[in-house]
Image (tube, rainbow, N blue to C red; front, side, top):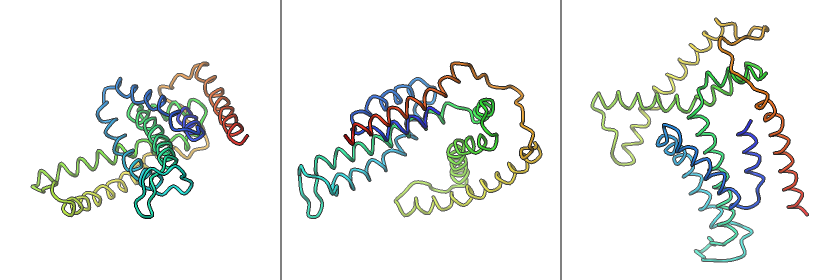
Length: 236
């Protein structure tokens, strides 16, 4: 709920400097958890391609740019283009920071229990938790494959062409491993009566306090109100 509301707020703000505070707060929170380096590594690896692409496309080829800073043939570096590129990059950076922090600090099994306890359909809860757990699972499997290949004497460093060939040797076992996991997971869910019409109960249900229920009700209301105010002021 909090991530959805944050995403709506992030895409509603009209200027890039509005996003500096929430992004700084999320990065500060990531320092307080035990796997800070891994969180920041994931975040930087996801954000940098978006940021570079944004500044190349919007910073140099922004069609509505008027304040020219420099010209490079058809490319025009404008203030408006840089501001829009910064806004787009910070939007992506803020959402990814929240998502990576949430993924790194939340156990998928506990999340599924919490969502089911809160009243969400178990099938939807399973899809949400599976999506969140997918990226770390793929990363762990890829690291295991690389470690096994290094143990067999495969050189995993070198120029771009060699690393591309190494990547192709990693993708195949990772994909086949994921497909095997899907089959095993489907069999396990069937054995547990996942498709039954009877609502399942949790062995250790997660607490869902009145304050949390109030937050789930008030957060969307406050978010939508803020978005409507920003849109109304922007069009006035």
